[in-house]
Length: 480
Image 1 (cartoon, helix red, strand yellow):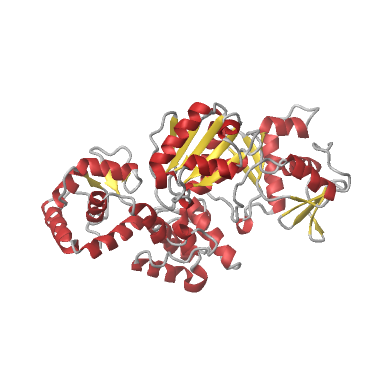
Image 2 (image 1 turned 45 degrees about the vertical axis):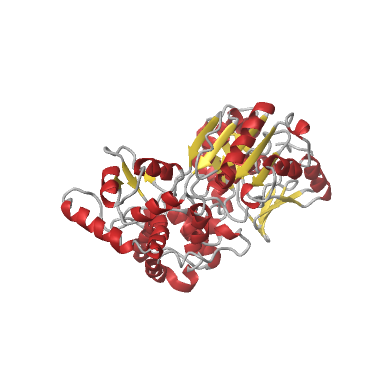
């Protein structure tokens, strides 16, 4: 098979621990040659040369089998063999991901061993300012694949969800996979760091080093992160850009919708976690993305970490109590080498204090769960904060009628709806009447605020009276 770009004959492509010698058609892991067939090498070359781009299945088949009619199952078999040869997925390292209903993408960083190739890649590199991703993205293949397919047809997409659910991670992964689609590049703006900027538009133009007249003619994607922090200016900005720049697309992350014209909403849900582990095996528990993330991050810090049968109840409980929130799981995993799993489970009884040791290189709001929640709690109205604090006595799902009986406050219905819109409460799907739920991590946080307010005893007493009258069938329990 011929090379698909003008590679020098002696080029070597490096990724992970491997060196792919294109001329000799071999892959080395140090001095050891990996055993893989010719078709697998062809597939690898196509994907590596297009690292960061989604290669459609039809295109991959046409390039690897140009003179044959081949079924998709053949491609899947060779992809599986290639992944096994590379140890794809071991120790948290991913190389090839499947973008559902679309194709495959090589996601590991690739470096060329030839100066000529480095020059070639520099001249043809997509324009962007996306931050470097330090860890693999786990449990988001389906969502990312769906967004990759939607974005070329969508002018404004807003990703919503609670603190720590991974909205920014998903948005940046989608942006990485779309780098080749937008001729004039992809540009990332973190709205959380420009509170003192006189104008979001001015900041955007300075970041892109361009004028408004030049911007409106571009075919580009703008990623606006943390839109809730400056929601009204952000909405005004995107609506102006949508009107003035017909080839510009916007991908926004926000804990609540912008309510802008042409806005498409996509909720980012927590990672899946097992409800119980009494009869589950290690393989069954590892099929849940929350567990995969916990184990992957634990192995990154403690290389001999392995999940054993006796660990399953503990791991399931940890992931459940952390609500499947990626940020909470990553912060917890950082403590496993010091506390072990049982110690970590025990320390979770002390609220969110354990979840306060993130990467020192992370922005301040992502170094602890308290900081992540403080970020949007401070933006709530005092009436919203007060209702949220009082609702923390409900450990299980509750109805509006139950809330009205337990807590005082004018306009309670409207406030609850706003708290749902701002991702502080979730709505149970299919429940009749409508039932609301507060994530465990959020409940711990606002319970501390309730304790500081001096209202704890009164609210707990009112709840106990209500619970006593409706003990049979209320579906709620007292938070402890």
